[in-house]
Image 1 (cartoon, rainbow, N blue to C red):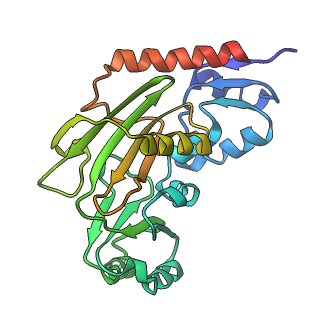
Image 2: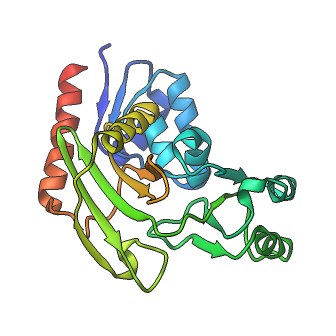
Length: 250
């Protein structure tokens, strides 16, 4: 029997038990949080996913991103799994002063919060107002927020700014404009895509006036196109071309 190819979630689910090594599923899997262990099962069985199982799992979790991409993120970025982790973080000198928390599975900037100090975070978790796990990192003021879209040879970058909130995601409004990536910023994007096996990506960078190096904020297989030049139709077309190219190479 030859390789089986599935391109939609319905056929994937209908044939899940029969998937074998070398079979391929193209397209994002619509898995619920309680089903995400299936990525591990599929990988162990040798089932090929496009996008990769790793990139799909990374896109779903801010905490997993902090584990995998810590070296590219703001120094001091850490995952807080429980109270023990938080107590340990309190003693970290790099986390003195204002800090930012990112809730694990929130998008569009909705899970990002700024605190005057880490003790405020501790108080909120103690009284059950902030759920574990979450990402904790120092607040870096005056950063330029850059969204990068990479699909094959298509690369677009634009800055996002909102003077009314520290959240620069355009979900909250604000302004945007074209941004020309330098070699270092483009290299960072390529490195994080390679590390997470991303065939395409929405990448958010932080560019601080106080450092020479950009920081990775987050990465995802999907994201809003508000502020981008690429149209939704062109966006979908380019992703489909990548999927077709991947299929031809199987």
